[in-house]
Image 1 (cartoon, rainbow, N blue to C red):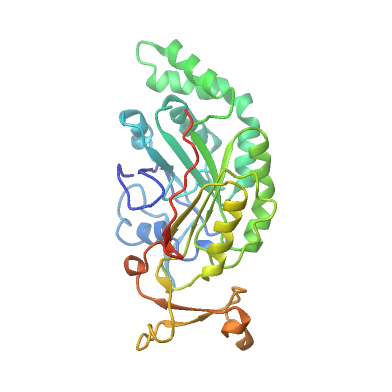
Image 2 (image 1 turned 135 degrees about the horizontal axis):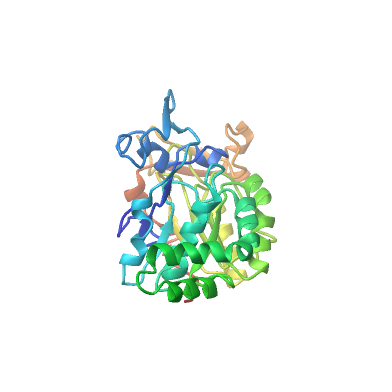
Length: 323
């Protein structure tokens, strides 16, 4: 949890729940998983949440409620964009529904902030949202019990009224990394948009191309490459950018990650450079690794040097903040 972060699309992180499990290829080089198994492995909020493997730390699937951090957003008076569960997934399989209720009670009581929820489990997020009205009394009661002070009735009514409708200060996002995951995760997000929630996509790490047709319902798209061994193809990010431009959707290009577009001449002497196939196949067929086949040349130069300019432009689009 941090008031201040290097993540380009948020102002602060909030980790009332930590821990997760690997569910798709985008998880392989998860920064939160690595931190939980290295620098933070003995911190009470992370201890025991990963196991050591030859490939490095891997989530065990255990999740943890950090009660001491639940009320943190209520103590931040200046409005912020807050990434919820940056070191876990609010809708991970082991997260008790009551814990999710706690988080939504806090978000309802902090309309000055914008909460950015991001999950790889949109089906569970959809089911929770569809059932939220039946849980209004519990969520409101929890808010009144913990933060009501000498005005519990007022807090109860505040939360109860807020969650009667989709919270305007909560953005529900899904992470996708390639076409397979985009196809699998699209329909639950569409259902959430149809009942009034602001929905968005984090296309990071982009490790394969995505056809964004039928994603026109989203309100924001953030795209980025991996800070790790897998490179992305520039055309994948251009396709996301152009889709957003065609549909008046705010677009943010977060980063190239470790790998930046280059040329054989620019990368001469860099052993970590080469062609990436437009298809995203790993390993790619030899015939795919030529410019005429759509391949792009990239070089591993590190995140800082790679930067975040896409065709010379820094894209910093955001949805309109609603409170």
